[in-house]
Length: 166
Image 1 (spheres, one colour):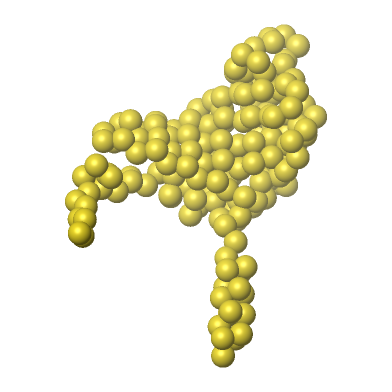
Image 2: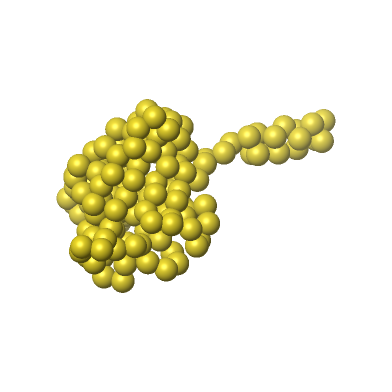
């Protein structure tokens, strides 16, 4: 009986996959300062692209990050890079401002809006910037995005009542 229980427990634990999406929340006492971040890690550290969605209060921003080398700047403007987003049927191209160091770029409002629409279709997306390429499995994106945008509980640790038994 005990072996059956352990087998079922192991099967249950291994069957629960969260996927590659990573969610982080930092809560403050005021909603406008709450921070949440949703990331999709690169498949390879040298050629992959990390997708990052960050929310501070109600403000949502998107970024792409590379962990090795730099995103290729445009020939006509070294402070910008080009990102292509493809779902297999259509490809959209965007010009993004680069951060100093060249390993991070901010998604423009239009790019972020298009990316979110494409992620909500739950099709696989491919992000391409120069020789960097990343395929994103968006099958569980809706649930993770709702968690990113959800208002956190207002119960803060300093508001909890604790009891000590002597």
